[in-house]
Amino acid sequence: MTRVASGSETSHPSKMDTELNEVCDSKELDGTRLAFKNLSFEVTLPNGDKKKILTDVSGLIPGGNMMFMMGPSGAGKSSLLDALADRVKAPVTGEVYVNSERKNPLTFNKIAKYVQQEDHLIPILTVRQTFEFQASFYTSNKSLVKERVAEAIKLLGLEAQEHTIVGGALIRGLSGGQKRRGSIGGE
Image (cartoon, rainbow, N blue to C red; front, side, top):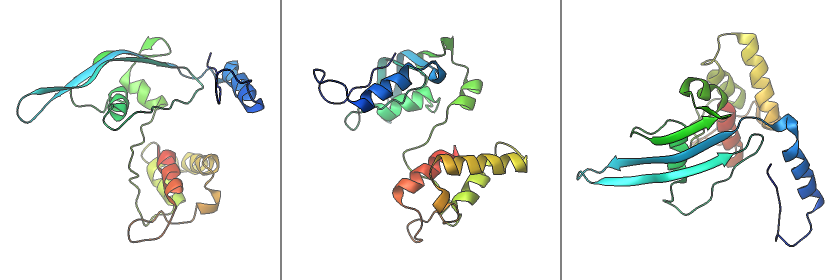
């Protein structure tokens, strides 16, 4: 059970805190639980020395919740996410569990997606074209692609921008936040 609280621990929970706690306690949002234990990895530097990147990192992300990682630059936030998403070339030691079972990389990639820090979108495509292009890698069923794209555009609040080009350094297009949502939608 996750408890949400804003402000100090001695204050009474606000109406929003109470509603969020009810949502977190709901059985309908049990979702997928992710647990990791003693994750570690190191890299070899050009001079041959070894550098530890993660050392015995453990945690639990309950289903139906959002997790925020905060820390200074170089603390290992991205490295932890890379290790959990199997995006590290170095051997990773430790254990990762999905719903109390050992993580299977093939099935894990069907329920979890990794969105990089930088948005890598094609500047001359519209939001709809971007989503359709990315969805075509997952299925050749055109009606399913259209259905999923419409669903993603609505879910991400990009209805007003669906025919707007993404844009880039030389082409005006979406705002930074809209591009971020575009990257999420593409996954």
